[in-house]
Length: 488
Image 1 (cartoon, helix red, strand yellow):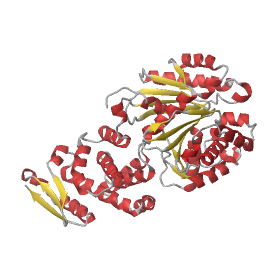
Image 2: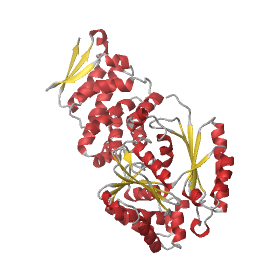
Image 3: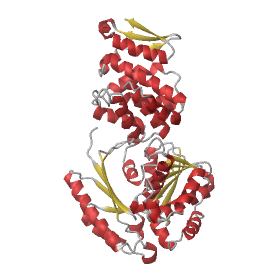
Image 4: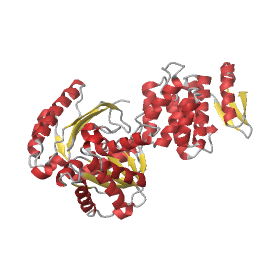
């Protein structure tokens, strides 16, 4: 947990953003996140210059960011500028003003660097990403192929929404032609058939949020939200036909992005069709996280992002830092046939098993369920998130069938049953030994064809009580066995 907070400032064509992370690590927690929609790249095509009003707003935002980072004693601020600044005639002049306002150097990224860092961010959050990362900023689209934890050299196209609406003269059909012309220059798109588009950028996230609201998706977290190809194509076609006024009143839409959303929808639609991709996967991680991830040592980069985040959460909010690993060791023999994905979720749940202890006993199940369901975890898809939340619900004795059925339809009956059994195992272990990892380590469990065998040293036979017998019997029943306690 040691390490000082670090800050990243992203000066984009549409927005200027400051994100402060708790430290440089595999799964950093966000301490502060603020953006200012300045649109410095507005009318870049027609003028070749950064917008004066937008530039003034950006400099004001950077001055505020300097105050915040200084107030928090942050000495490490990585500031990057993207398409609008690198392409504008007055880009160098703006960089000088930005540097003075922020009090830190500002690095102007090439398009290839921007694509690479966005891909680094996606791979940090979705290590098994297979397809193409698309980072749609206000001024450009950066693309990078990803597979097997690696990325190709990135490419950039000047078809961000602000630049696109300027180049198309506000005509959507003309914008489609411009995007198609740009995509024709990208070699290798035909190799992406059946793979995924990993969507990065505020406009694309906003489109996904609108879709999520429209579908009444049971998990309201954008990271790893997926839209299948046919639905994504039809939805982006619909969105591109909406007026700004309509979008401003659409649930999920950000009013200040309403002008750019139809053009972002055009880019997504044409890319899906050109590459014959089969789905869109939204990534909450992108350029800013890529800046951090690129600085990590190989050993840190190799860690599982979900398990790293859950273990750090346990250290911050649990009662005993070693408890998660003790629960992992204790419960593993109960699930010998669990598939790799579910076993990974079991391990994650072991770290989270004591994070709800401060809550009121009557509400811990619901509170833990909601917290895990909506937690800013990476390295997990929505189905996995649902399973993990159900584990925590059962770990704290939740019995509201409405909660269970809400997600059982989404994650599947078999996964929901596994979540219940894992939760009952964690509940039994925590009732038996409390939050004492050393004590839990002195006990063990194993399965025989007919019994759940619990081994307890005679020196600790006082652990055996009615409450623990009740929890063990519930676990044994879920495993289709009877309980046998052996004192040794």
